[in-house]
Length: 95
Image (cartoon, rainbow, N blue to C red; front, side):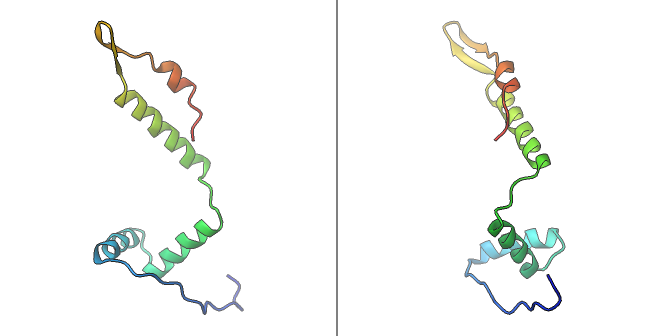
């Protein structure tokens, strides 16, 4: 922010004690004040922040792993059989 600009506007909201505790825990873990953290998050959202390539890759890996772990079997005529999911995972291109 340029030195000649002064932050003179306030944005606020009400929240429950448990919501405030959740935010406080996140803010503390990131070493910021609540105001700094809220400003950063709100401005990122207003700017239409897109996930980085690393974030997209990590999400794709987690989704692929979830596919492998949660869907290894399918019900067939002979009972549960191992799914051929390698084609599905290989063709996954992320979100």
